Length: 168
Ligand SMILES: [Zn+2]
View (cartoon, rainbow, N blue to C red):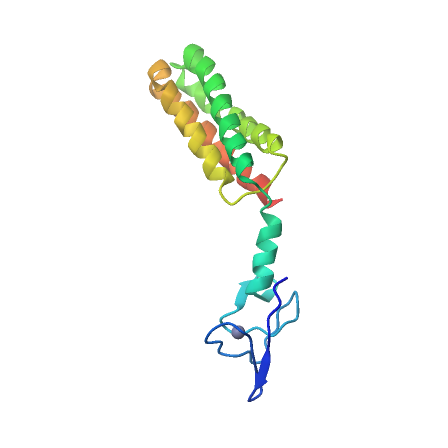
């Protein structure tokens, strides 16, 4: 926890941020330190200090750079392999692509998240989505529009699965 110095002047409490406007009695819900309008971060449970908010975010997002690389790799290859067979055998049957795209995409999202130990990251859904779109474009010559339909639906399903999972 960052420790700040506070000074009281004219009934206001000032922190050591530059140009601190001073706290008028507002305190952080978490740490109970006085917070000024510069330090206040609004949350559903009330105002907390920037330091407390940063600490909370650091604890919440526990992913490392290798996890992003692994997530991208898993999502890419899972899409490439499933998309390859789907494009090969079902590429022309667009209606089926709509039905298989979502569950396969959701499964890819789950497998990816499990592989990185359920760690949460700010950019995981974007990394996974990017890898899947990349794989889809590689497969495009095989299945044409059908591949794009499958890849698009699978990507949306994986990414949204991810965002739901991350919120837990
Ligand atoms: Zn301040």
